[in-house]
Amino acid sequence: TWGKLIAGHQMRLGTEYGSIAMSRAVGDFCSTPHGLSNEPEIGMELELEESQQHLILCCSDGIWDVISPEQAARLVARFDTASVQLAAERLVSKAKLRWQEMQDVVDDITAVLVRPCFH
Image (cartoon, rainbow, N blue to C red; front, side, top):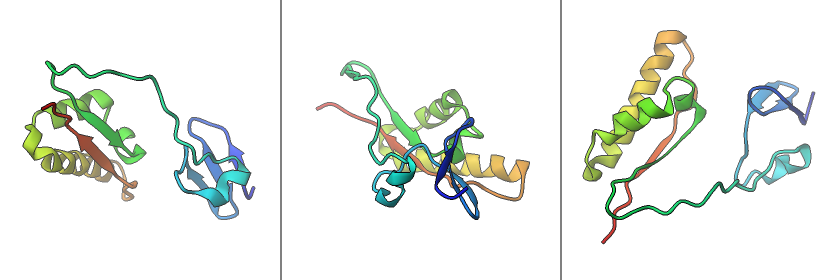
């Protein structure tokens, strides 16, 4: 069903060739007439305390489908603030390995890690 949103566990944009899982796509203006939003959802505002250490972890479903948020946070928190690139790479590697253990296909895997610091 071309251009029709299919409701399920995830939002999917159906095409004549199959469907693609999409919750939103920033900059994807051609799919907005079919119900895909290019506007990000902004959740609750959170104030970070300077006396605490923080991390912000944004990942694609290629990670969340095989690693829980708690596991991901524990893994990247083991690295110091100077090693955020290495921490994100290790998380991606772990997700890739889990996909390979389950099947021959590996989903797209993206991880962005931010360790805010206050000066």
